[in-house]
Structure formats: structure tokens, C-alpha cells
Image (cartoon, rainbow, N blue to C red):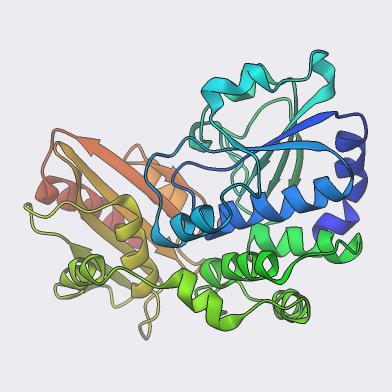
Length: 328
Ligand SMILES: [Mn+2]
């Protein structure tokens, strides 16, 4: 309930704002879009002018379904048109950044300069690139940004249609991998609260449904898992298949489910000349420390790195060298 303790920060940020923009990270997922939509509902109830900024051109299936189903119900704008929506007095505009606190990860960095007053609501670790000059509500003990927003909805007794409750629940289900990661009693309580508002578990499963071809491609990565010191799971793709970053991340998530595995690293091609690593840990391995040695980043439990003009096997060698040093 960290966000409730810090509600004064939230209230003082929104009190004087006439127009509020909500922006999340690039490659929206259900926690990002869910927290934006939930926050939109909280702010509408407070009679604020409110816009959701989305620049992504492609969306994952669940996000795509939500945006299609909510077409016309919420005001979504692209960042390039933001000038049309800004309140004339610049001090009356507020930007709320959700589900990330990192400058380089937001939908569009320029927006950070166009709006002076900023509030970050997030559950990831802070770091060197955390957005500057912003009020920050960051609760790393919470499963998801959707859980934080659910706390607000309950606290302010916001009337929420069941469909919106379902969207928030889907964000929690996604970020906890079906209540298996980062799940506390409060996470279950939030799920209970959303269910009491009519959230549908069946509809959540519909939003989380995967594309069968993408699933098959990811399974290929599961065919060549090796373990390092019995605790680290490693896998890599063939040079010929191109994956999306989130596919590598999903495989890294899955690898943590195996007995004794404490950390996972997945290497694959993510662009014509780009190789990516996605990594996860249960907490005993510091992913950000390991990946920063390769020019990547993240936090204790999750991170990624990107390499240009190299090969999968070279990246594999470099990574394994660092893992060996860490293990010594
Ligand atoms: Mn999240």
C-alpha cells in the first residue's frame, strides 16, 4: 500500500493541474496500458482533463485487443500532437509516467522536456537514468503498477466498470506471471478487490492469450537450454530466426520456473544486425551488475542488453566469461 502512504505527493501534483498526460514505457504491456487506463479513471473522477500518450506502432495482442475495444472511450493522443492539448499556462500541465522511471524507456523522451511538472508512479528499481525533476512514487515491493493504481481506486472509492477492473487485473496477472512472482498478501487483496468490482478471470485469460506461431518460435529456444553451475539457465537462438525483445524476456521468465534455477539468460537475434540478451533472476544474482559489464542495464531481477554488428556466439562467449568471473 506504499502509494496510499504517499498519496500527498500524488494529491499535491494533481491538485493544481488542469491537463494531465499519462505516458508509460515503449512496447506497452498489460501493466503499462492497464495502469494508464486505471489512472485515467481516477483522474476523470477528479474532473481532470486527461490524455493517454501512445506512440507505439505495433502492440502485443492483449494491448491491441484493449485499444480496439476501448476505441472512442478514452482520449489517446500521439506525442507529436501534444502541443494541441497542452494547457496554455505551462505550470498547469502535469505528466504522469507509469510503469517505468527510466528516461530512455518512455514512449517519447521529448515529452519529458515539454512538460515541466512530472510525477512517476512505478514499481521498478530507480537508477542512473531515472527521470530528473520529477516527483517519484516508487514501490518496488509491489507486484505491478496496476496493483498500485488498484490501491488508489479503492482508497478513493472510484466507481469502475467491470471491464476496466478486468484490465487492471490482467496487468497484475501479467507482471506476477499468474501470481507466481512478486506476489504478496496485498497482491491477492487487490485481485480480490478487482474481482469484487466485476473483473473477469475468463476475460483476463482472453487478454493474455498468445499467438500460436510466436509461442512455437519461443519453444525453439527452450530446446537448447544449458545450465551453468546448476543455478543459471542459458539458451540462445539460431542465427536465422529473429525474435522480438519481449519473446526473449518471456523465455527468460519461464526459465526461472525450473528447480534450482536462480537466474536465466537468453541470447537471440532481435534485428538484422542486432543481438539481444534478456535476463532474469530470483534475487541472488544481480542482473543489472552483470549486464552493465556488457553495456546493458536493468535492475536486480530483470534486465537486457543489446549488441550491434556481432554474432550470437560472440555475445554468448562474452556473457559466459562474465558469469564465470561472477561465480568465482
Ligand atoms: Mn509493470
